Structures are given as structure tokens and as C-alpha cells.
Image (cartoon, rainbow, N blue to C red):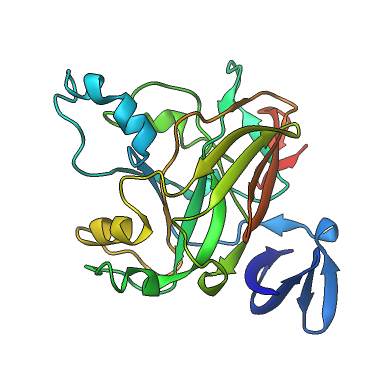
Amino acid sequence: MTHVQVMVDGSMLTKEMILDSGALIYNGHRYHLEQLSYQAPVTGTIYGILLNDKTFVNGMDDEFHQAPYNKPPRHPVMYIKPINTVNGHRKSIPMPKGEPVLEMNASIGMVLDKTASNVTVADALDHIAGYTIVNDVTIPHDHYHRPNIKNKVRDGFCPVGPWIVEKEAVSNPNDLILNVSVNGEVKQSIHTSDVNRKAAELLLEVSAFMTLSKGDVLLLGIFDGAPHAEIGDKVQIQVDGIGTLENTITTETDWIPGGGVS
């Protein structure tokens, strides 16, 4: 059994909730997962990371020696997924008018348990409450020198969940496999070891120049080969030991805030 944190019908149920055999147990009551209405289980700022994927960075080596880069990146490129992007498990993702596809960028979110400033590699993960799954949805683009923010911060563009799994349940965040499926077919498999900065190193580097607060979420990065999805597609990101984050793509006109469909 695994302790989790999850938003259920507007209330945050914390470490007393147990995940067991397809159900959540809380205060002696058993809740079947399919019967729950989910909200994103995070309340802090979500920080995205570009250029932390070894495969992508190695493939860009020639381009990184040309303008506007001129040299390979020395530090991660960061951006924020603001509150309007936050979405929940089993909610819909809006397709902006005029766009044919969206990019499904699966990542692991490290949820902070306390303030992190100038941490060390040795104590970095002591600042983590747990882990969750994040879909850093993006309108496809090919500019990485500076994040193309208008393609990343649309309403509903950051599903998170289905819950936060306590860090004790994940023995090594650098040894996880994320399987991304579209309409039941696996389109991408990611191993979290394929990064330039592993979890503790990334937290060290970021906390060296900015303070992260309790509840904030730091993504491990987005990975090369992210699949695309169209209106009507069902997208699932499955991670053993954490769970499955599921969303469906809908039209922008049918979507309402909170991930619902009008």
C-alpha cells in the first residue's frame, strides 16, 4: 500500500489516504478510483525545464554552435506553467482554434515539502514531499533559445496528477519509466535516467539562484520524441509506482475552466 495526497471534490486529502488495489481508503471509507472527481493535487508554482534531455541536447549539438545559441547550454532553461494552465486527471485539454495537434510532454513533477535554497546534492531530496505526473502540453514549435511562452501557457495546458505519491514510495526518481499512450497505443517510452541533471542535481542548480517554496513543483524536464494528439484523442501517461494521468483533447469552444466540457 502507498500513501498519497489527492484533491477529491475540492478537498485535499493528505497522508492518511491509502492507495490499495484500485481504490483509495480514507477514514475507513473505500473510494473506487473511477468514482472520484479529480483536481490537480498541487497548489504551488510549476517550473518547467528545457534542455535537460540528453538525447535531444546531443541531437542539437551542431545547431547549438550556430546563432542564436553559439555554444551548447550550460544551465537549464526554465519557464513557468502559471495557474491558468493547471488541469486535473480525467479532465479535458482544449485545442486552440486553428491548431491541428498538440504536443504531449510527459514529465515527473517533484513536489516541494519545504523551502529549498542553496541545497546540496546530499540533502536535495530531503526537500521533496513526493512525486506526481505532469503533462506539459505545448503547441508544437522548434524554438528553444527562449521558450515560446504563448505556445506553453494556454488554459488547461498542464494536467497534473492523479495524485502525489510520497517520496518513500519512489525509491529512485532517476529510475522511472513513463509510457505515453494515445488512444491506447504506446507512442513514447521515457526513462528518467536519460537527463543531463538528475533530480538532486537539478534541484541543487535551481535552488542556487532562486528559492523554491513548499508546494512548488519542479519538473525533471521534457523529452525528445513527444507524441502529438488531436481533438478526440485520449492521452495516458503511466508510471509504475505513481499511477496513470489521463486526459482527452477537446475543442477550445467546448472547453470550460477546470478541464470540463460545456
